[in-house]
Image: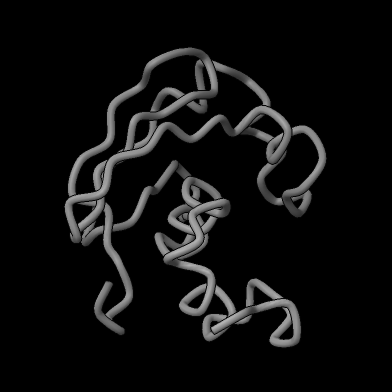
Amino acid sequence: MADAMPEISEACQAADYVLQLTFSDGRRGRMDFTALIESGLPPVFASLLDPAVFAEFRLEHGTLHWHGDLDLAPEYLYFRAFAHEPSLQRQFADWGYLEQQTVHA
């Protein structure tokens, strides 16, 4: 993958908190937001616990947005969707999502 940050080019809902995402590099992945919403997001995102509110996402300029100016960085969603892909580990480390010493050349 190039050094450019990925953007989301398509997003559709597959289940209450699951989105099918297509990124600008052509990779497609399913992102289950359940654990992220229930435990990993700052309180400002609490409204997303309501499945109806979560379903009101929109795609703007390559990023997922919800009401109240809530959004999630596309590179973070890319990381979450493809965290276990060996070929992307260096890129994730460069973005600061992995400890540098755990990345192998």
